[in-house]
Length: 480
Image (tube, rainbow, N blue to C red; front, side, top):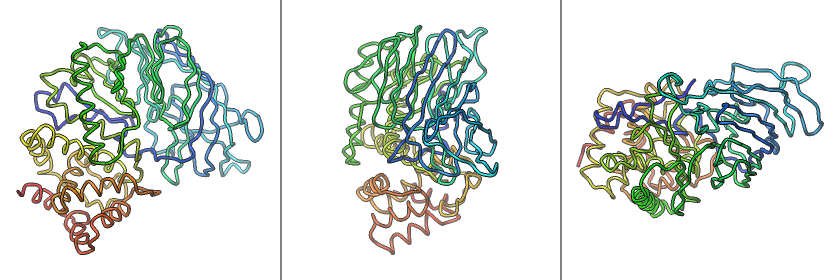
């Protein structure tokens, strides 16, 4: 399905129509970290004035998986797919509508075996394809009805696209293990003759019309190329800055403070500075943020996008959202959850982290106002406890579940075990190796943190397996 641009029910009423947020990891199916990521190499030619991609890309180090799909944006037209290893030949391929976790932007490809009943997967694949996309370069006639995270968005001055949802490059999905392989090492030559700056996740922005970008670390290949300047103070990188030097300096200090807070609490340092992208939507009304870390893309007109974070009249309120985005370094990059509870773990813990930061750095009064809003949103909410959730259909309202129910669940547990143990549990969730970040995984890390079976059983009965968990959570959170 197309990504939902989720309303910020946590904003003040006067702000609800101005600013919405979609997080790159805020979806039900999330990528899982791989020790041996595929590698993608080749050439990409772009034109921001024509809205075109011309790609010749090869994937190697392909994992040996049986039940797979290869995702590629539906707007990309294939010339061919060629097997490079173990033999070189042009492949026949089929499409499928069974890739239920695809978001609608991409098509699902596979290679039938000789029997026609199974699949085979070469060790190295070359994809040659082109795509042409509309250019929304004014707000009178040439604009779209909606803009969204998975959109390959040309606005006349730049092209913006994430990697996983838009699937502008081909990547594999392991249907059996619910693992996506959009994070790759890469060596790609990018040419954009009508650009002044080229940026792709995992590299510094390059002010050139042609460059070769490399990374030995796997990244989701979020892309932002066009005509824009770059600010880099060592603490953050800002692409397309339209703010005063003083505002940028002040914002940089906020980022430094927030990063320091998380590093102190979790004992895990940020690997690299965040890269903030300031750009406009292809529509006339949408505004949101999303994360493909280290890239945090702010899309919106004026103060409806990244500008809201720089606007001092709004900044106090939006500091939590900055903190939430930075929290996705831990839950989304350092640890990439999967399984049915992956979304809840990623969004719920990021939201919890941001609330704790607000409580300690902004003060109790602002923190309590945010808690009151979440209490209000949960008053008429009902859900199965997390111990009984087996599929996405068991979650009645995804937004309320991950942004309100989950962080309030964690706050209730914090009140039971104390702040010190809560930070220990979060660190355990981040550092414990597992194939699936499911309920058993959450429970085992909690048990190993609490080290008291009677207390663990009490927490389970009150919050994790209780059909009236919403009531018990609210009761605990409201208590002094």
